[in-house]
Every structure is written in structure tokens, then in C-alpha cells.
Length: 243
Image (cartoon, rainbow, N blue to C red; front, side, top):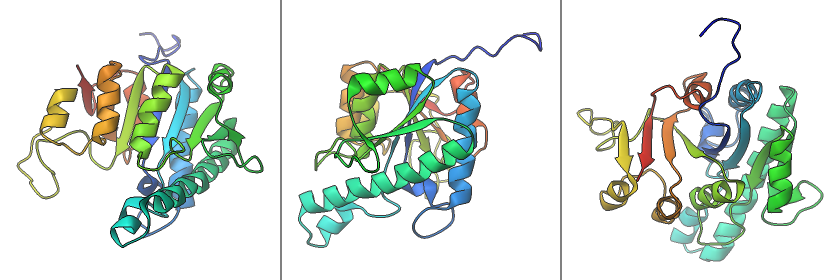
């Protein structure tokens, strides 16, 4: 490819799934503005080459409904609190993106008009078509569903070509590479294998939803700067989950 040729992304519309923990950096809790800024730079980079980007973010850096319910809190209440935590993260991410000159809209599944737009599918698609980054907050709006499931659901609704699942490791391994140094990384793996071997990629509901709708999931390491661009350009990094 000559220097002057414009980059031709492999994926034109993606859904990026970030965990709440991704925003913590090395802190034990909350949001590290420097980390949010770095993620925003990576997203701005792919926006500049014409990739339409939707983001679903978790809330685990602030509050985990599942952990609270294990300690005796009502599960639904805990999950709603977790959904509100994702809104805080979405606003932080919106701020970081707009500092990078990327127009961003936060759409939330729980109505709170003072801080974000309510989620309306057609409006969200229109934002993407206009070159805005769309951050989906408050999960699916329902307790008992994770933000992984929200990511799968929103990706279908937006007709995204792939879910980019950003993690701390560079793909899916046969076992936890931190505990088992001998574990090997898969380049490709099927949905069924992920479910059967209970590999901690996304929860079973999310995987099943992707399997039913033939939506590929690409697991990659977010900590390496520029990796989001490498993935959308089709470079062979991470692990892809397909049929």
C-alpha cells in the first residue's frame, strides 16, 4: 500500500466492550483520568479513519451488583446500583473523548434526561452514521443481565460487525495465564467451545446471543496503546470467537 492511500479498515462499525476496571488503571477503585484519556485517544484514532464506534462500559470499578447480592443485598437492587455506576463511567469516557475532539453521545437504558439521552435504537444508529461515538450506559436496563449481555444486545441492534472485548490479556487462553504460565492462546475458537469449557470470555447469555446471531467476538489486550486500531485494520491480534 502506498503512503498516500487512505487506510481501509477491516471493520466499518464496531462495538467496543470495556470493563469498568479498565478505567481504574492501577488504582484500587474509581476512575483514573489518564487511563480514560488514553482509551479516548485510541478511539479518536479509529474515528479518524472512518470507523463507526459504539461502546458499552461496565461498572465494576465503582459497584458490583453480584458482589453486593452475595453479601445479602437484594439482587435487583444491587444490579440497579451497578447500572448507575456504568452511567458515571460513561460520562467520564464522554468527557475524555470530547477532550480529544470526538463528538460523543451517552445513551442510557434507565431514563435520566438531565445527564444523558434515553436509549432509542434509531437515534443511536443515526448518531453513528453522523460520526459520533455512542456510549451505551445502564446495561440493558434490567437486573440479572450483565453489561456483557448488554454489549451483545446493543451490537445486534446497531448491526455492528464485531464485538471488540477489551481485556487485560492478549486473547483467550486454555486456562488463566496468570495462574497457569503453561496455558496457550487460541487464535480462533468457537462459541460452543467457549461455553463447554466455561472460558471466562463473556457470560453464557452474551455468548449464546452472539452464537444465535453469528456475531464474532474479538478478545484483545487494551493495555497496549494502538491495539484498537490494529484490530479494526484486521491485524491478527487477540482471539476471535466465531461459529
